[in-house]
Image (cartoon, rainbow, N blue to C red; front, side, top):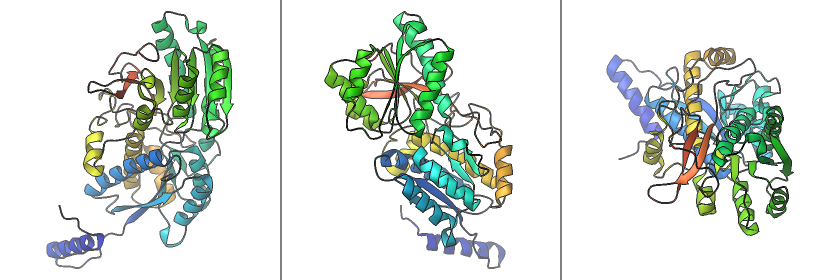
Length: 413
């Protein structure tokens, strides 16, 4: 199919208007939205996956007429680290590139500086993936988070320990020896702290909480500590790629716990499953909604891979794109209802959003608190299981309404 360039498209649109009305009228001006993600560097793969989800939502919206009659144009910004995030956010907040709103960013180190620049510029910033508490605890007026909080990921993991892992092993939850392992960064610290608090409240047994430096060369020493503590369940929250380092160290040590339960990061990434191989069988994660999920609570989730395949010629690499797609849809609808780029009208439209749980492709509902946090977003408990055609696939095993498979009781099945 021949592609039509933007200038040609605008010309055709103008000609069509003249043909219908007999009067010349300038085509609607683009509505610019900044899309700031780590598109290169260590988090580039998942950052690009999130960008693609946003891009698909924008293309869908433009095909339906745009936002209050204006076609949406994404202004793409690569932010592989915090310095680049601040610089790119400033670029998009100023001059000819000034955008009406930001969508980002997948990663807490990107979200924190980018949203701060947006706040100072008075531009609404919509976070679609960063989970650290700090993102929403600064009292910002123009920052909104569509995605779940660190506490939500922590609760999903702890619920899995008590409700699935312990019963499947035939032991009481407080008999399991639990270790928390996380990256020494804002996201990992937030999840680790929330997990520790829940373990204390529920009188479970925490043998150790281990924090490691970002981008570790290997996790051999960490695995030795876990083995020395006889950890049976390891709760892990790290940057993409850390899960591969952990399983490599487990294999080299010739030891593994009964269960590993990740928290987002690379645990839902098909590349991780391919790199780790069969050792990942049975691994659980509190994660973004997978494509293998009960569509009664996530309408459209199973159709998303087909949409993605038609657009990009490949299958989705994780549920991050689906989450970004679902979140961007909500943002675009709020901007449309605002009917203007005036920030107070945008805020009013966002705060008026009221969607029941189970009505978006990610399974989330939408209702924002006064700080701008969506209170109806929640992770799904996922597990890597054998695929019918060979290899592994990530499936939903909890909560019950989302599940499409029974849980495997331990690593290795």
